[in-house]
Image 1 (spheres, rainbow, N blue to C red):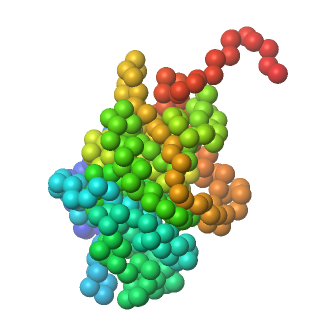
Image 2: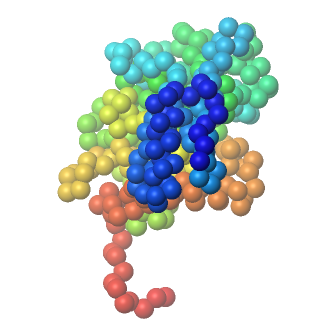
Image 3: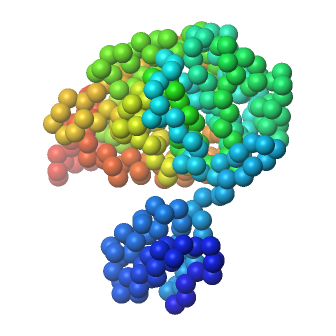
Length: 337
């Protein structure tokens, strides 16, 4: 058995890794899992090589490039979540590829969004084309929107979908946080109706598209009104609820099904308690092709979606009480169709 070769690893992390290796050698998997979690909490990851191991930083480093800090993890982004709110809403967008999609979404916001709205763009290790749009003095991302420039948060390496959203949300000063996918084009004011919907304390989240389910295994498009989950294309929630129930689970590296998980997290009031509501609104917005989906081969996007869905089942698979209209459970021994 050998320890890590990196001299920059803190002594206490090396000691945790050594104890974990001993637990694995003794087949004490429970203790090994606890020690792994402690190592990861300290900002490191352990890579097993039989009974040997090595330690690496859990996240890429923060870098300063051209006078701009690029963050290696969501947690490295300075948080404003403990500050008082200064705007009714914050809109968060992710920008990595497809600058035309970002420009279209920003043009819609600029034309229709209330002036007090804060906008945060997460430049998630953008392509050169996307970076050019973000940095151009007259580009769509640099033009005044509601009287202020959109704030930009840049990363030093590609973050997963949930981590990139967490990075943007940490800068939110709005009472309501609105996640807007760049595949969505606002054709009117989408911010005001979402803020108004969340003035109702029984509502946990609201958005432009919703889902319903009878069994937590299959989800279908839902009509406007109360729904089981809000789709992540246009999804709003209170900043206070994010502080209390977040952050988003960063194991969701691909975007699909994170919205279902987050909807259930926000709605859940505990078994036996009245759950909070998710409300789909009729909003002035168009959905275009989602390039993060269409750019992948079908087998790959289905594999990534399925892996994300297992995280929902692990946490909520038995929580049919969260559904508005749960389907009757099949009786044991009933003949299959």
